[in-house]
Image (tube, rainbow, N blue to C red; front, side, top):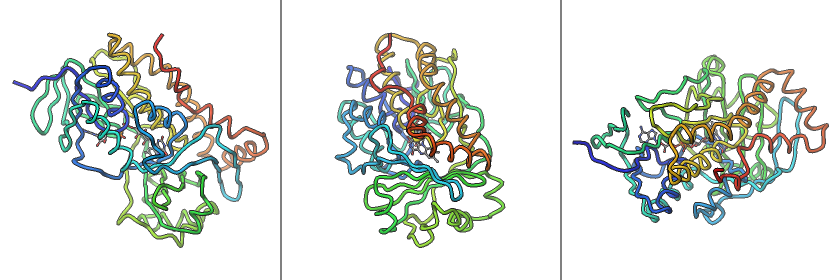
Length: 363
Ligand SMILES: Cc1cc2nc3c(=O)[nH]c(=O)nc-3n(C[C@H](O)[C@H](O)[C@H](O)COP(=O)(O)OP(=O)(O)OC[C@H]3O[C@@H](n4cnc5c(N)ncnc54)[C@H](O)[C@@H]3O)c2cc1C
């Protein structure tokens, strides 16, 4: 006999934890399963947009109190060209190690049953097969993020590899204070920004064939340091023994309503190109929306349709911007255009946001 639970949340990242916190706050008793046994680093640029910060506050998480540093400016680099603008919203930068742990602590505090170190191997017909036995759930929320679960596949992403490394570089950190710097290069793009603890987070996406030509992480780093926006990293001290890596992220994926009864949250529902720095906001808001709609008696397909309507525009726009940035002439022209139009870059940053955080109420 499988164990039984009214609501099972698979994955304790931002989407799963957000849903579980709100469900518990509304009197539910969700069970959340997270495969990592303890705090861990995660591949992410760690840029928290204004909506993400607001959603966190609504969940009882004060990112500033956790040590988040303010980000007020974005700069775009392509070769020697550069565009810079103040962000049209207050943003923060906080490591996922700290943020995700705080979310699960908050979940446990408000009454969520959190089981760490348990992995879901597959789902079928409302039953999750886990490393600790089968669990039967009336409602199953799939929030396993970048990782697919057997029984609920997503389309495969392109042949691209994501990397993340922390660095210590005091002079560069001082120069970059308050800034997220995005560099587009042949074969990919990279984001560099300060994060708590006086560190810099370098997070990037590179075409798989380009990386294989280079052959190794040190060779890729040396290649990146030829870009004017990243050159100072050549003298920086790496802080992880090796970079975190991920491949085939399905950028542009938007989950449609399906009849399998599964509620898809976060990266399982919508994957926005990383350079927009809005994936965490989508994750948080999808979790909060799922909890709200579940409380109102909605069904999974209704929720999926509402979420799709909110995520389609920013994801589609971000994919279009990415297509332009992938072409050398396109990105140079785009940066020239953005620096020539007052407010152009700020407008682009605003248009690629998922939604007004206060517009979550379901009509
Ligand atoms: C290179 C890169 C850079 C990015 N930079 C940014 C950025 O700067 N700003 C931003 O807002 N977004 C960024 N994003 C996007 C952001 O990281 C994601 O959108 C966000 O983490 C999605 O949250 P989630 O909760 O859906 O998934 P995740 O954060 O991936 O959480 C999923 C959780 O589920 C757990 N899990 C997975 N499989 C199982 C299983 N089988 N059983 C149990 N548990 C499981 C995992 O351990 C994990 O904790 C970036 C993404 C990439 C790839």
